[in-house]
Amino acid sequence: MTAALEAEGLGMRFGRSWALRDCSVSLPAGSVVALVGPNGAGKTTLMHLVCGLLRPTEGRVRVFGEDAAGGSAEALAKVGFVAQEHPLYRGLTVPELLRMGQALNPGFDRTLAELRLDALGIPMNKRAGALSGGQQAQVSLALAVAKRPRLLVLDEPLANLDPVARRDFSRTLMSAVAEDGVTVLLSSHVIADLEAVCDRLVVLDRGTVRLDGAIDDVLAAHRLLSGPREAAAEVPGVVRAVHSERHSDLLVRTGLEETALHPIWQEHPVGLEELILAYLERPAVTR
Ligand SMILES: Nc1ncnc2c1ncn2[C@@H]1O[C@H](COP(=O)(O)OP(=O)(O)OP(=O)(O)O)[C@@H](O)[C@H]1O
View (cartoon, rainbow, N blue to C red):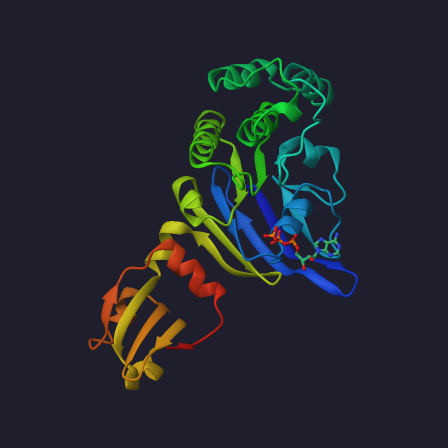
């Protein structure tokens, strides 16, 4: 089956620095993918490459089989993008924005957008610049979804939204996923928000992919081990180690059969936030 998004050896260099290097990921159609990483990790760069806003320095990226480089019409038609800070033409009212969306995108479903925005109580007569941050985010999402894209790329759409607006935005997103079967690539720094809606994870750090997979599989493949420090060096697959004088807490990448080799270690399942932080932290920590 064609992947929704396929990057092969993808790299982007600005001047002498690589914002993204050797990035290879394949995202199945229908997945909702969390793109996570610290500031400057390369998330926006990857998203801009996917949307054709940047041309890669090396490698390639395809959206449902179409080369996204340089924003080919075929690839662009398949992608909906909500940029960071969800920019809108501030002087236009919501109906004017919808008319513009319809004029620019063949197949734009204006009725769908109107119904969604009406259900959310968005004031249609106001100019976009006079709407609250949460309302602007909803309008941006409605415009992107009404294009009926096969891949929706959302760059930190929940930033600066209050908890109710975040929940409403996530609900609108999930109904688009359920009704339209759209594939979503979503970045955020708030893991709890991502955990509620995503089934797949890509962790980027300093321009490289640290972790990529279905969230359930990734969690099942990791364990927290707690035990004596003198035995810590023998444990394979350690992602993060926290040592005190006699004791070590280890986060390990391992199968169940391997952890059974270490009966002296107490095993606990790992949560998503802890797992991601472990991959983003530098190696062993001593307290
Ligand atoms: N147009 C550009 N010119 C030069 N350097 C850039 C440009 N865009 C991004 N970079 C650099 O590329 C790196 C990755 O930036 P990017 O915006 O992709 O990170 P990010 O993961 O989205 O960060 P954040 O979480 O802060 O939004 C950073 O070092 C950034 O300074």
